[in-house]
Length: 403
Ligand code: PMT
Image (cartoon, rainbow, N blue to C red; front, side, top):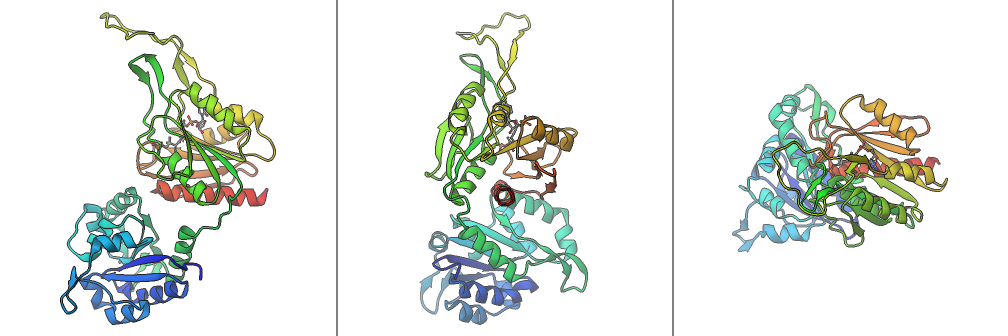
């Protein structure tokens, strides 16, 4: 019973795939989960509350209150109760409402109140799924940190063939098991993650920096910790902080600070993942006091910073696994492979500023992973940074198993 003790809110919306919710409920219960089903009214046209209530062993909720028993179906309590919320199937209509922040039924109010991870399995006809509005809505709900499962391609209820089929219940359950009760594959491993930008002082009030928010590095640190690792996060000034107190956070400001902190920790680390956007240059002679306008042009002498990742690559022991990032705008693959080799890395994660929704600051990313040995390249779809972190850690673990 791999979901034993897990409380799952199952949201069911008006799509023909709702008939699969019965099987989904049965499988979740079989794995030991406690299920509370919340249906939209239109879902009732496709599967009955009696069916889902019988299978989940609890009355199903659709309205904000149940007049017969005089009870209020408290969406805030439901949202707080759950370890995870799964909306399967999620119709184009519900996806659009989630993207826009609508709250006109119990399922949406519960979604907005939920503090847990939310998994959404879209199901609709292929042209609805391919419509630019749906594509934009899915990108938007991904950026809220939701996890999108599928849809799959195949035969649809309309008789047409294409993308839009809800992921099969068995696959959804396997995905949830992995996400909610991960194997602690990294137990006993010490991991160093770098994140965020660095700031290079020009004078006491000005600096040179970049647009990194720290989101990618924080997601990686959280995922590594979730898989059992002891994680130290060296992070430049970022908009995002780890929510997990088990991660040891070392805040730094400049490239030199980050270099010093990383080198101290690296010697004792089994794995290092460098997601920080470190400045390549720093002012050679920062002024001690605020520089004044003179009306003339200003020349600042920039000197190269130490490449932290390359220093680590030079010192790398056989037992260590070193992962770098490459943020590119041109000749992406070629540049990433060159960094992989030059910096003696085991794996590099390429993200390109040319891909919309990828790279700096966004809540999503689109990556390609390149491995050292055979330089296999694995491209991934646009996903939330949390899911990208899961893909990177899965890939890293598969490399560790091979080595
Ligand atoms: O923080 P977010 O807003 O979530 O954005 C995430 C990200 C875009 C910053 C992240 O996904 C990313 O790509 N990080 C690396 C950015 C970068 O500086 O790439 P690069 O190609 O210039 O550097 C290559 C590698 O060398 C990186 O692992 C970098 O950390 C490292 N490096 C670079 C320069 C330097 N002086 N020392 C380094 O260690």
